[in-house]
Image 1 (cartoon, rainbow, N blue to C red):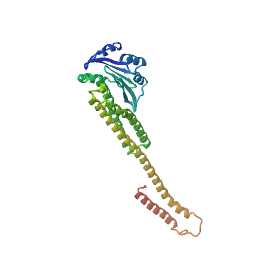
Image 2 (spheres, rainbow, N blue to C red):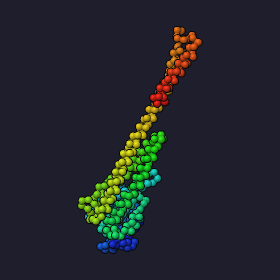
Image 3 (cartoon, rainbow, N blue to C red):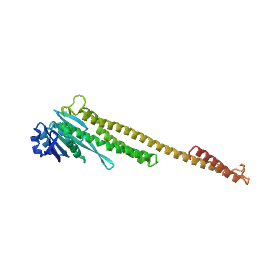
Image 4 (cartoon, rainbow, N blue to C red):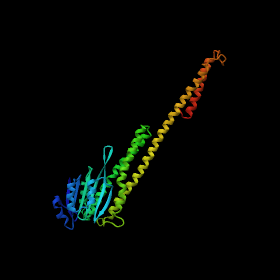
Length: 321
C-alpha cells in the first residue's frame, strides 16, 4: 500500500499528492516527489514505473524481493536494496527496502518489515538546507537510518554472549549453553549478510566515479560507510568470541567428564582393596597366615581400613575426590 506520497521543492515540503498528479510535480526542475510503499502489489509498482520510468530489471528485483544488499546504477538513476533486521521475541526477522532514486523522485518499497521511515521523513523536513540537495540526500538519510538500526541489535547480541558466558562458568546446562551460542552465531551471520555487501556498495557513492545523484554528498555517504565498516568489524569480533566460547564450553564438558572419571576410578580403588583382602581370606586353604589366630579377623579389617584411608588421602591430595 502507499504510505506517503509527498512533493518537495527547494528543500521544503509542498503537500501530499495523489499518484495521478506525480507527473505534474516531477516536471518542475527544483521539485521532487518522495513516495513510500509498504508490501506493494504488482499493480502499484507498475503504476510507479509509469510515473517515474523505473528500469525493468530494478522493478523485477523489487517485485520478487530476497535480494542481496546492493546499489546499482541505471541510466542516471540508482536502485539500492538494504536488509531491514528487526527483533521478534528471541528471533531476528529480515525484511527489505528497495530504494529507487532519480533526479526528481525517491521511491522506497518496504517489504516484510514492521518499522517504517516516518522519523527519517521528519528528520529530512527539519533540515531543509540539506534536503535542498534533493533525492540524493533522501537516499543518504534512508541508508543511514537502516544502518543505524543494526547497532542496537548488535548491542543486544553482545549482552547475550556475556550472559551465556556467565552461565557457562556457573556450571549451568552445558548443552543449553552450546545451543544458545550456536543460535547467537546464526544471528550474527544474518547481520553479516546484511552489512558485508554494503561495504562495496556504499563505497561507490563517495570514491572514484561518483554517480551524479551523490555529487556533493560524498562526506555523508562516507559516514554511512564508516558505520558499516564499524559494524562489520564488531560482527567479526563477536563471531570470534562465540567460536571461542563454544570451544570453551566443549572443553568444560570434557573437564567435567574427566572429573567424573577420576571420582569413579577413586571409588573403584577404595572398594577393590577390601574386596581383594576379603577375597583372599575367603579361599578354602588350611595353611593361611593368622587363619586360626583370634586377632586374624580384626587385623584383616584394620588392614582394609588403613589401606582405604591411605588411598583416600592420596586421591584427595591429587584432587581426584
